[in-house]
Image 1 (cartoon, helix red, strand yellow):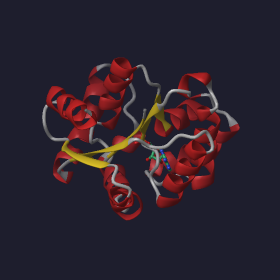
Image 2 (cartoon, helix red, strand yellow):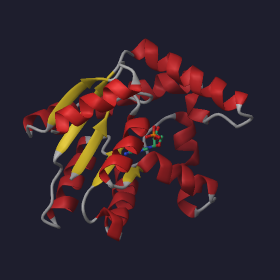
Image 3 (cartoon, helix red, strand yellow):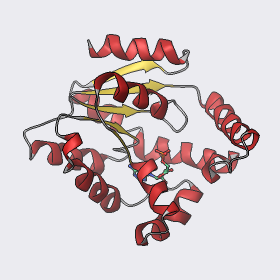
Length: 192
Ligand code: AMP
């Protein structure tokens, strides 16, 4: 099963993706995690994208499509995957359809986590505080100004995917403001 978890930054995609991977034995394919790993490793890719992530802008479609294309070749993705933070633009969604179709596969469902924007800013602030409390460095893109930019970028580039997947009959929209366990239950119910 290939699933897309979809929603604005801070909607809880990563949390639900981890739960889904444990329950269904599917790998979590998070382009954000892959890009952060490249930055931490100071690889050529990491150096190229570091400032883009820090600003909360989108990395080019070519880069993320390339990363996902490579990742899908690994054996653990043979039976499906949970896509977290990808696709984020229409060209990425079209590329994902092509990549899967090349192996006779398709996206089976798209789970949209609907959330309130004011709450998202609060959640990001909470993540910054939690990281500091644990003696860790907060994600630079969780600072309020950058979160606002990430939300603008989401509205402009990513929100149109709702219609793209609705037209494909794959969209399942859920209340992402509910407690984590309730969201998980709603996802299970939506997937049948
Ligand atoms: P995330 O952890 O999914 O919130 O992603 C963190 C950051 O990585 C985003 O703000 C973007 O700068 C970049 N990024 C992650 N996924 C993508 C994507 N599919 N397309 C473009 N940029 C991405």
